[in-house]
Length: 198
Length: 198
DNA sequence: GCAGGGCTAGAACGATCGCTCTAGTTCGGT
DNA sequence: ACCGAACTAGAGCGATCGTTCTAGCCCTGC
Image 1 (cartoon, rainbow over the protein chains, first blue to last red):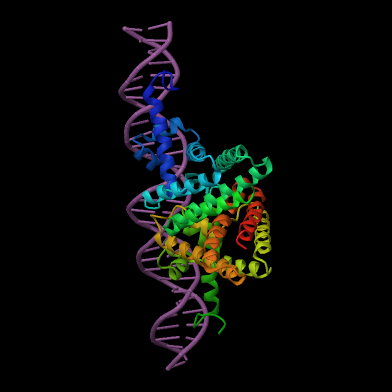
Image 2 (cartoon, rainbow over the protein chains, first blue to last red):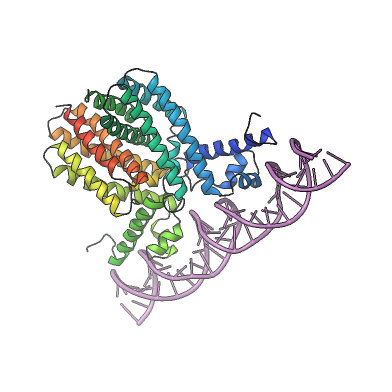
């Protein structure tokens, strides 16, 4: 029993393939710009399969995609922060790493949560909620690192807010400008801001 | 001759009404989530008028909407920064003002440029370019203020990058979380960061 | 007072949208 | 061996998408 499906191990593979494809497509095209039929084709699944696994339709697909992006970035964030004992150095390395990833995709793959959630306030509230949870989780990861580095709880919480917000904004700016500069500058400034609390 | 149209003053009004409506709709629903027919109905113009003024179709509408958002926010930014002699205080007041505007719209009206540009990398490159110009202009406004306050050109340019990126990210975070906290915290942190360069 | 261009008006095009539906296939449990 | 659940398969629903088109209104310049 390596998967959650009781009968067919390949089945869980199909579901996951659909979610990963949805996340990738919405990352580039946004929620409204991505069609369910396109998802089914690129995931190598039929439309019937998509609606079998996601009876909630497109909104459920979007929510699942946001949650996947949530988990993946939370993991990436935790690893990047734990790689360096000092949060200042970790933040600089983190932004450099984000900039590399962005450039490697020809500036197409920004934050999967951001691009999916924009414009869904009224049409897909479930996506909005999932995105709020993602941001909160990422803030918690940053706050934990800062608290472990000797910052008070209040300072860590507030700094985590700005770290996540600045990373989001800088990634968007870098994507639009097709340049690593916004991310790299943001990394140095975040390090400086954090250091000012010592 | 109060308008640019040679024959009919009301004509320029129609064009502007279409652009304003496009900007408002794409701010809430994104580029792909906004239909040309919806724009024509809500602007009180016919489809023929829309394509008369914007023969480039939806992409030209999106580009014009981004440029309008560009000008409006650049003006708002300049006024907010000039209202206070010290950039630190101006930044705090600016974020408070942005948070108020966001709350007044029930957290629906975020940055019009951000929501319009997301997901248009491959489908509407013109929109992408207009957004890049908007960010660059806003950075120039911030850099000018900082330079006028005694910062060196290099510091002002770099700080402007982070100020704009953080404002973008914090506005998005505030919108998703339906809370003024991300923006207010960002304002205080940006002020602290700027002060650290004195 | 008439000619002509700027603009309005809305029907209609093919394509695609999200989604539903029925039929068929596959497979473990008994 | 066979029943029923899990899943696949894809045709097709009404609606809407972005866009084009022709017809006509209205105002200005002559």
